[in-house]
Image (cartoon, helix red, strand yellow):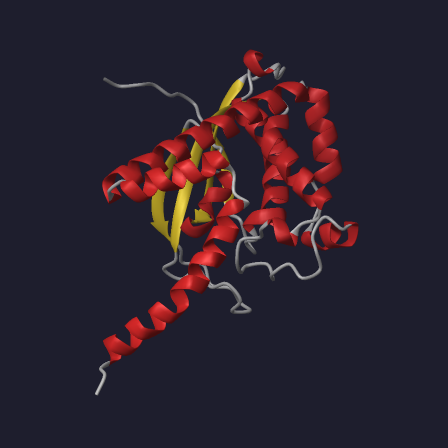
Length: 248
């Protein structure tokens, strides 16, 4: 009597010609460079593959960073531009984004999963990218990005994100990340934060005398939350930094 392994071998033998034909048909349409890359990956051990993946990730992040810097430079962000951005978006809500078509009607409820491109219209994708670029310019912009803000005081921005959603702000630089557990409980039991794994991000930035940068940061974070992060409450605070130093 045949055992299970023998039966599996018999089925594999019967299916092999069909599998080979189907695989050849699929590979025939692939780019030559992609095929070479796949053959190389098949010949490497697990450690080498991990190193290649890490290098590819670093290169992808470097390209994304360069692209963002280029876009931020075209903003020419100054006090007037910040005021215009705040006036346009300070009162934006999830409902208004749904009404304007930036968010699709089937987007997951607030307080649940991260929103992805399928939950946003092309206009929503553009607005999200713009909000991230403005946030970057507000926090890190300087003469090299043609950002013209009279920064006269130092502020410390602290905000919390679930670890699973931290990738939404992976473009942040010069920030400190701290792991923490959430304790907030949703009265409607949609998104209880009890013992949830969170990441606290701290960024020190320069603000103007009228705190225009801070107002812009809040407006930008509001857009990013409603278009991607999707938290019911995105905790953020800004405090004045009287003095900072590096101790060696």
